[in-house]
Image (cartoon, rainbow, N blue to C red):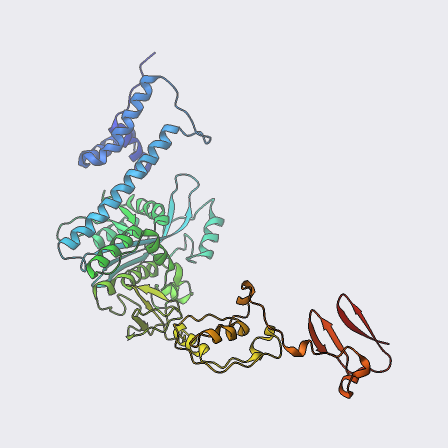
Length: 511
């Protein structure tokens, strides 16, 4: 029995390359083309393939079959893919941190450029996780210049999509509403589109290709679309797609440190602000096609532009960068601001606030320990002024019916006490006033429930004549009801009224 050939890293790379880009080539032709690419790869780029070959050699020597998951996939392969994903994430985070740190060190934080990318697709293939592209946009952004350049184009992938026509139609109608192939709009040369993207992001001085940033949920889609476009391109450059939320967090930390304002506690805070998408419904950000059909939200050009506006809205004030309409914010965005001190807040805080005239949002947002109050909001009264008004008000017995009738009316008292006042029972307060002259009114009728201080009942409650022979003329026309030590007057009785008592009360019955 011939010995099974052990694959090396180059053989594994050739197999992967041929399955993606060289399906029409023979094995010898694919090996020749893959050899040219393998020779230009660095040791770091070859490491994953060499590691896979090493794992396969170890498995072949042991002679034991690898364990499988419930889906029939090797457990070792699943763990290897997870490890590769973790390593890729760590490399991405280190690169972003080093990029921002070097820009601060070289005094280029405001001018450092970043590229945002977003794509739309028609349908996803059943196998291979291939997304058929429909639209692509790239934007260049910096804190100083805002969104200074944009590249946008529709993509016509060519022939009709067989077998997935319903899925493509449903996805298009629910999102971007672009016409399906073969009637798709835009450029049909995939290689030309990829070359244009490379030319757009290439560094003119160093000739390097910086990474592009997008939503982490759309990272796989962007990578698949770029691979789709790359197949017809003569260039072998692979673009790196990184997480824009992590860049948002690291860049915010850098601007806070430079502006000497508090940093966000963790990335969850910056993620929540970024996901808010405050400029989602602004006009004039999308392409003409999506503006005409009122689908600006799903336009890729609108997406990358809104991301730049959110970066500017969250960070430029930290380092005192003047906002430019159309680059840092929408053209119709009102940038006039007025300092308001003290702040109109129901929490009686003394921090300075900024009142911004803006129609983009009506929310109150915290920026650098300040709050933004838009002019459309209602006017609030501070708790301090509200408490002072309450304490200086004349207290009437009708304000608290539960205190009973016949209470002595309290005199007016203007309180100069602290903002927070405590309300107590009037009877309890009267006893306290006899001992303390400068006491404060306690207006809570229920606070005396927890105090064992009995009330002295009014004499009128018990000064009752129980003999009907000695009743006066006024008493003859009314009946007296007794209940729980309290007297109440009822309607006048006629001759057919019967009085009876039960459980300590006197009731009347009309016949």
